[in-house]
Length: 435
Image 1: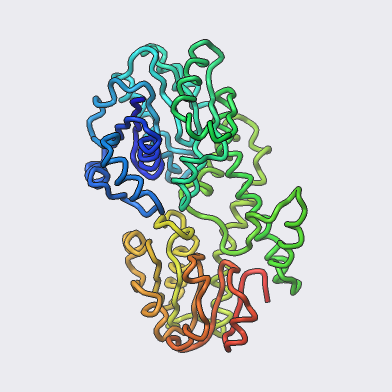
Image 2: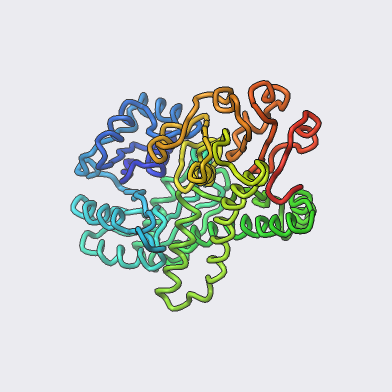
């Protein structure tokens, strides 16, 4: 089937490549000339494991092309809209500028019977308005939220844990769902659950899921605050309550909390939309979820000062990690980079390293020092902070690291190291929620 993908950022580029991998003829469209040139060369403009190989295969097959010319979507039966919905400056609400522009531009190239598939994360009520705008074209809108995890986006696209269709109650809606079944034939054949619902529910699924995950993360970080005050161990606490099948252990890892381009802005936009709908009290708890998350970053800097005798002025500090999570070069709302910047503002001499995110970090925080290797970053350091849990940092040998640093002080911002192992090697070890 010929399909188009409008917007070739993180979501769109992965989706386009994976749809071609599934055997479809795909044209990806974006207004960014540099991004399109990179993708046309088979080069991903961001780091995502597995994507370069999928791009190479798809481009070589001839099933995938990228362009800035929107007219090339003509003839496609299904059009995926994958543009971003960032947080508005100075507000909690989502900025729908790119969504509105994409739908407006696409409308001129649609034919009756086409299916337009919204994958962007939007405030509930957005799809209904867009569907009305599409009526004169004869195209049908389906809302098909994405559930990608950065670092696992290729797997999540090719083998999703569920697919959700928000469709109108009409024959056209049923035909659109059937066409989307053809697009997703391979994962559906694997037994992937398929949920068909209305527009409102489909729009709520993604933000509800992200809000639940954010709440779970902030809950265990709130427990970490209590553990620090009482001498308890938050990791042991999480292990104990995680055995309860109603709770589960996943996302109960205390530490610096969440960041990235989805969870923070999505829960804020969710709160803003609830306020517009007059049900803001229903989501008032998310304000504390957000506040707990941000407090973890401040507490990390407090720990650093405590370990340095009350001041980090002119102390040489090595920060391991700039990306908001491992297996990504995404530094949007990165807790790691935020902590590094806070420490710099308080007078520390901060050197940051990361396997993939250094280029992006330099653009956002050029005032920090950067090192391309772990060894260069920790050379002469009086304090080391592990803030992004890349595997090469999780598996560090404390004896090896000790040969480079000036002082053996480790702050584990992700609770991923073995405290006993590091202390036996002569290191002072601290972590959020542990003593």
